[in-house]
Amino acid sequence: MKQVEIVTTAILLSWVVVVIMLERRFPYRKGLPFFREGFWTDLVLYTLVQSFFLKIIIFDYIILPLDQHFSFSKLNFVTGWPVWVQVLFFLITHDFYIYWFHRWQHHSPVLWRTHEAHHSGKQVDWLAGSRSHAVEILINQTIEFAPIILLGADPVVVPIKALIDAVWGIWIHSNVDVKSGRLQYFFNGPEMHLWHHADHQEVYHANFSTKFAFWDWMFGTAYLPGHKPDKWGLYYAFPKDYFMQHVFSVKRFDDRELQRRYPFYRRYQLFLPVLGRRLRTLAKRRGPGSTPVVTTDTNPSRVSA
Image (cartoon, rainbow, N blue to C red):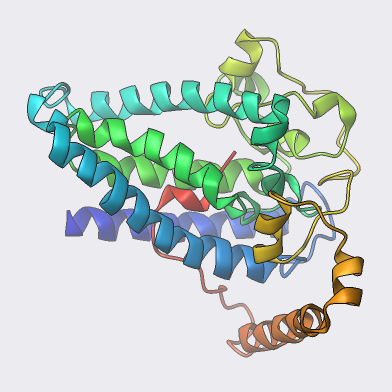
């Protein structure tokens, strides 16, 4: 397993570098800065901190106790299958679930509260997929990995599935101008998913697929016009701070009113840009042409649809 983790980490890091290079060479949206708004929030708080804690909660405090209590994995439902069949099986079944849950999130006012953070970015790139509400990740990743473990899949299926999730999530959110042709009817990519993140009314309920685009074409939710969107993100004001984004999902508030009423919150908001500038300075000191530091964990909670 250690060797598998090393290989998957190397593949993921290599893929991040490749996608960043593609974004610079073939940008879907020209002029998008690398250190765009929310970059450090997405990288540090969503990608590193949130993923670390949610991984512990999901595997150690939900899935493991379930298996210890019910011993489902000892029944070996899928143990005899070839590993590639197991991976393909869980890829397709989970992607089918994600399509419908994702679609439900866009139709349910309650579930939308757990998904709106993912759509809040007005500049979408390879890292944007990591911005997902903790409750959304908790639900989706538990439903994703619990069957793999409880049905007795080969242990290697978890890191392989996680790697595929991360690679695909980075790709569909990447700022890469690509035309997939007929492949777009089968496999999802930035061509369709960047439209899903657009602030255009016609796509508020379209392009829900994550990996396999045929779900959208099959169920009539595909949208792929011949032009590009001109704006992304939400049509309403949304907090930029990680913690306030989670608070906003429970209690709506006006950010300016909070700053007026609570001096400590105003000071906190003034501190964030200073921190961002210092982080950008540190990144630039690494030298010209150097690759920004990225996570090495293939935990799929870093990416979302």
